[in-house]
Length: 233
Image 1: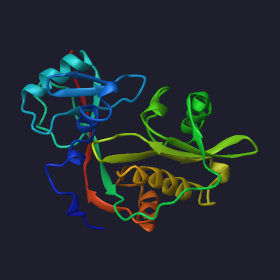
Image 2: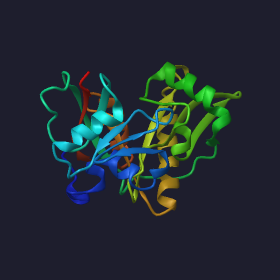
Image 3: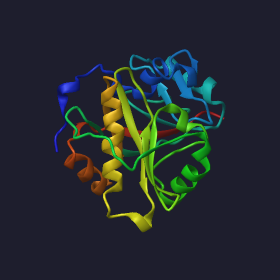
Image 4: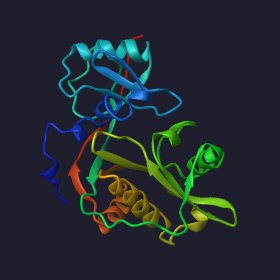
């Protein structure tokens, strides 16, 4: 699996949080100078401008507040020495330019009334961060059996022209039935129907998910790191 360079460099996907918050997701943004974040009840993500210099870290400190852990991804300058210890994990960024996509007859659109069930499913399956207003970032689809929400997937980061597929999860009792694959394809279908392209992130160690995404046409674009830093006290 080698990176797909068709998306190029200097691209919105190189700084997806910054690009989203200064584009389609501006209504969810808090921005100081060259640093941006989602409102806390929407998502926990911060981003720096792709051309940011050392001064961007001062903007980020003002935005996050003192002694706060901040998770970042994308290209960025190294943090100043006075910032707390850095930890990170390796990820993959995959693009679905040629993904096999299509609607699913069992998928239903999820909304604000479904958030308690969505939060419960996320808590039990741990697909990644999901807050009380995350559902507002885009379209979320779910599959219900006997009225219970057993699988879901939806849209998260939204750089111009691209939409991230996220919160892909299935109740453990219903795994092995292809529900996650179907929902990813259904979400991708909606993204492509409005003239945009799907992409996603995964941990580099989550080989099962990566194989699933490759099987339906996603291709590796980049191997970003997801980095946690702590602002000065």
